Structures are given as structure tokens and as C-alpha cells.
Length: 276
Length: 81
Image (cartoon, rainbow over the protein chains, first blue to last red):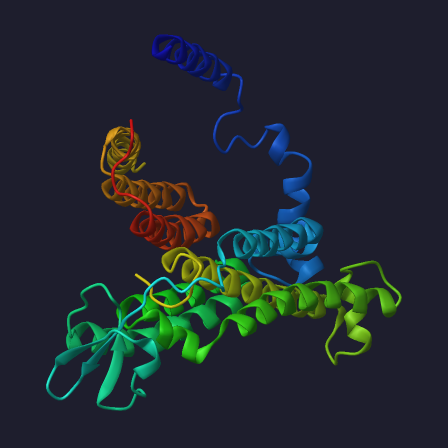
């Protein structure tokens, strides 16, 4: 059975390699891909959309529908993950662990109903062994704000430099995941709880489709950003870049919330109590 | 123009890909997959596709590796075959 698989893979690989010689050469100016549409995008892109980064201009303006449904795919992935993994009923661990910070003594409390309140001296810790890692926590505490500022920069400069809503959202989500890795899962949920994450991801879709529908109300087509110049005090080419930025912010919201949601549910088995 | 860098990165991509599917330990497989993503990111950057390289670095090498590690942490570290 293994041999049949190997032979099939080998033949398919040979066929693929054989077909690649029909491809146009890399960067060939006379290839079909760069004779019809690309020339139009390169020559007219900047004056039509007002966005110096052509990739964002194509993604968010010329191919706005594609990006909208990609964002919806990410949102659906988050919803499917919630349906599959989220487990709000079962409480597996019966006992909880606390650490008394001044003395670094670990308390093991078998009856959860007798658990003490958390305070500055007493913090709850995960069941698996967690060291008292002040260096790691301090470094991450310094680093996380810079990562978040960088993420916002990537979103805001999506139409002038590489990046955009998707990358910025992932970086922002990664900063929250870093918080959850270096501290614990509960400190993330204390700042932004599950309901807010779901709300933010839905809000992202609402912003994206809302901008599209707003253009329809102003008399244009769906996602025809030029119509926004009727309500915004800028000229018609720059308003397209502004519309793209609004859309990118929506995508950033969706991706950030879904990434954090996936991580929290995966690492805690859907119970959202103790993470990695 | 940069053929030595191209050659080294391509070789590392192939080595990482083969290592990631042949290693038994799933955690090392996840890390090798992250290394593979990072090499692919370098390759995109060499070819001038900076946006794709950016996405590959943040999603492929960053977040998806963490997802794999989280999934392995909650399941098992040994592969059956």
C-alpha cells in the first residue's frame, strides 16, 4: 500500500515538474498575466485609487469583494471553532493553586468553594508547574505595548507601505497571545473577555459591509469608495485611499479577535480557565 | 544576482520541509514547520513580494506555530505512524 502511494506521488511530481516548463519565465513582461491587467494597475493604480502600495490597492479596492469574503471566511473559522471546542459546562480540575507572592509559597486548595480572593499578595496559578519568572514577565510587559503600537502602524499605513489589516490584526492578536503565554490565560480574559472578542469580530464584518452599504446609500455601487467624498471633506482620489483604510481597520478587528479566540480555546481545551 | 542567498534559502526550505514530515516528535515537527515558514518568508522577500513575506512571517512563522504548540499541548506529542 505504501508503495502505491509513493509511485502515485512520484508520477504526480514528475507531471507537475514537466508542466512547469510551459510557464512564462519569472518576471516576463510578455506573459499573459502581465500584459492585460497588470499594466493597467501599474499605470493607473496610483491616480485612480490614491494608494501608493499597489498590493493594497488591488486587494481592498479593485478586488474588494474577494477581501470581504476572505474576512468572512476567517470569521466563520472562529465561529466553527467556538462550536467545536468551547466547553462551558465541565469543570475538570477540582482543586486550585495559589501563590503567596512575598514568600513564594504555593497553596493547594482542594475545595474550590473555599478559595481565597485574589489580591496583590496572592495570585492564582495554573495546575501545571509554573515558575516565578519575574524576568520573563517584565520583558514581556515592556515589549507588548511596542508590538501593539507596531500593529496599529501596520494597519494605518496599509495603503502606503507593505502590510494592511490582515497583518496588523495578526500582530495585535499575537501580542495578546504573548501576554497569555508569559502571564496566564486569565490575565488576557481579565482585559478582554470572550463576549467582547466575539463582538469585535462581528464589528469588523459590520465595518466592512457598512462602508460598502454606505456607498450604496450615497448612490454608488457596493464598495464604490468614490461616493464617500459626498460626506467626507476630501477630493475623489484621496477618498478611495481613506475608504480602503476603513476597510482595512474592519479586517484588522476580525483577524485580531479570531486569532485570540482560536488560541484561547485551543490552549485551554475550550474551558478558558488554564492555558499553556 | 543574489544566487548564493537564493540557493541557500531554497536548500533550507527543502530540508525543513522533508524534516518536518519525517520527524516523529510532533513538537519538533511544529518548530521545523515554523522554520520552513520563515525560510519561505525570506524567499518571498528575495522575490520582491514584500506583502506576502509579511503575511508569511506573521501568520506562518508566528501565530500558526503557536496554534500547533497549543494543540500538541492539549493532545499528544507522539505521532502514531
